[in-house]
Every structure is written in structure tokens, then in C-alpha cells.
Length: 218
Ligand SMILES: [Cu+2]
Image (cartoon, rainbow, N blue to C red; front, side, top):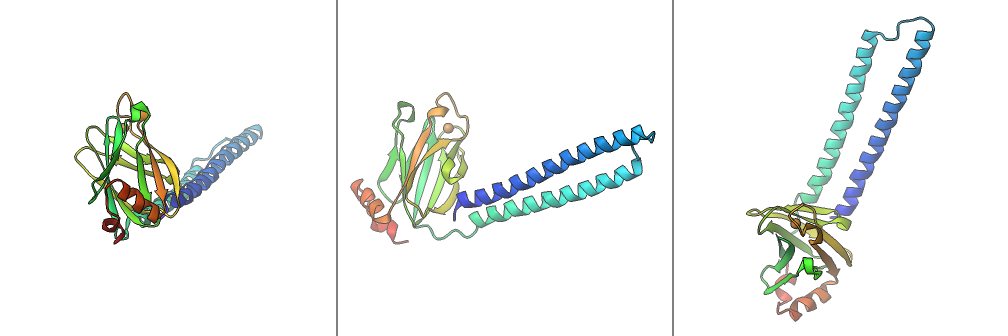
């Protein structure tokens, strides 16, 4: 499952269609303008209502088809991302609060937090290639769990858990942000996501008092 790739596909398709519609509208406006000027110069009336109705109806038809395609396309991609997630090898609870984050590894005595406004950003460490369930909630107001590079964004609501399952194939370290204006230090509410090889993840977990077996059996 790659949110980034699917996002690029959807965004690419939508950009091409938006560009084509834009050109079509501009071309139609220019040709209508030129056409009506020529007609007026020749002494004809500049518009014919019956013809314009037909044109408008066909324009409406084309737009309806484009809109139906876009809705189906993006819903299909969205559905593919969320339907039948693989059985998660582990679950991480993400708690957003004013103004930082806490990542708790379920079944492990391990949790990571920081002081975002002091510049100590917490890091969400994840194993590459293992399906991980991320459960996002908030302790106070509405925040947004957002990792721009990976194209993940999900609301963190107080009193409600939003979750998704993801498998990250690639090692790396990316910045995460709060995407919902949540107070004075909203702009400092950043974190890191670090994806490491499974063996290194297990070592990291053990070094913090966890046990690798509990999470790698899934
Ligand atoms: Cu926030």
C-alpha cells in the first residue's frame, strides 16, 4: 500500500483533466468572442438562444461525465487503501495533545514523547515491511496527524480513534506535522517518522525495555 503513489496518480489525473477543461473553457470563450464580433460586423444579431441551449446542454453533459469519472476514480483509489488491510503485526497509539505527540507501542512498555515547543521532537520508529496499525486520537482539541512526504493525513479527535493499517517498504526519516490549527504552539507541533529494518527495530524496542517477540509474530 503506497499512499504516495496513489496520491500521485489521483493528483496527476485531476491536474490533466483540470488543465484540459481550463483550455476548453478559454478556447470556447475566445471563439465565442471572435464569432460574435464577426457576426456583428456583418450586421447579424450576435446570439441565437436555441443554439446556445443545445451547446450548454452538451457542455453540462461533458462536465457530468468528467465529474462522475473523477469521483469514481478517487473513491476507488481510496477504497483500495482502506479495504482489507493485512493483519497488523503491531499497533501504535498516537496521542496528539497541546502541543506535541505521544507514540505508545501496544503490548510493550514503550512510549515516546517530546517537548515540541522546546525543539525536542518525538520520533515514531516503525519497522520496514511489517504491517502496522496506527490509532490516532487527541487528549484535548482537534489536531491533524500529517506526514507530508508519505501523503498520510488523518484527524486526531478527542474522544474518538481514527485508525489505518500501513506497510512501509522503504527505510527513511520524514518530518510529520500537525495539520489542524490547534493553539499558540501549533506551528511547533512537529515529529519525525523513522522507518528502519525489522532487526534494527527489534533491537530499538528491546533497548527501551520491550520484547521483540511480541510484535514480530504477526
Ligand atoms: Cu495540533
